[in-house]
Length: 320
Image 1 (cartoon, rainbow, N blue to C red):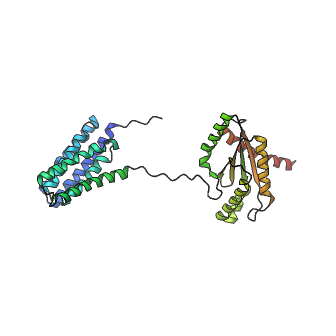
Image 2 (cartoon, helix red, strand yellow; image 1 turned 45 degrees about the vertical axis):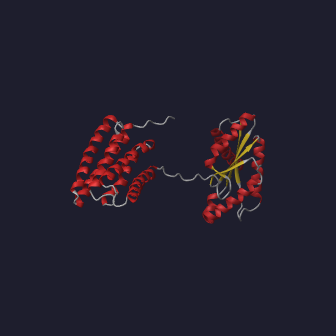
Image 3 (cartoon, rainbow, N blue to C red; image 1 turned 90 degrees about the vertical axis):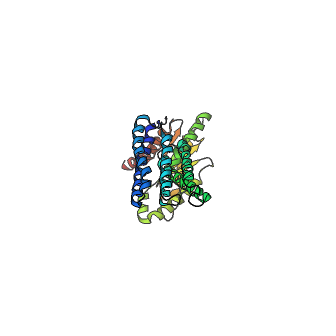
């Protein structure tokens, strides 16, 4: 699937709208502080922000860097005409890179941050000591610009996905999430080697009743005990999955339908032969085989159908 093309106008439009909010806030701060001289660059920035939205609708990102340079020069003028590097307006230095970077593709970030040097040049011309100490002033400005960039990067970071659980805690078997990939690998190998792969379904009878009176912990302990009995019948290259609370699926490389039925019967006999955590347990089994059934979906459908078929046959036999 091809990646959708980015609309070049979108980032420019969002930047323009954020720019309007930024300069409105700067104008309000200037008015409230009584710094009417610093109000002028803010008002000019607000007008330029409105123009940037109009141009963004018509020409997309064409003048993005020009407006970035203008933004930094106007912010620098507001800071220089106001309280200087250590004044209240200097906090806006962190907000401007945030405005520029948040809606923009990360490939454009160096070009949008580079005009921030215009701020240093303008402030250096207005106040060579940068608020009393050139070194401290430079560090403060660069730290503020960096903080805005970091804030934008954190907001743009995709949310972390919950880790995929690969192994069931109670049984040590693979979870159903791993089933498609692992079984497709077995089928691909069997196709290359002209070999068989069988699936065996093992479902605990009366599991809901046990969970009802033994509770979640008791029923999980019982499932773990049954899983250990299942495992001792498996080879090292067999794959076992817990696909439902009461159901296991076992993949058997290099074994045909007859061998799979014999294994299913052996496991069911082992589980039924003695109590499992104080309870008598029985397994409903189903079997399917590749290449008799060619696809993974077909195998899963057949093994489920076979598991239902056996109890139904027993019911009919009893009725007769």
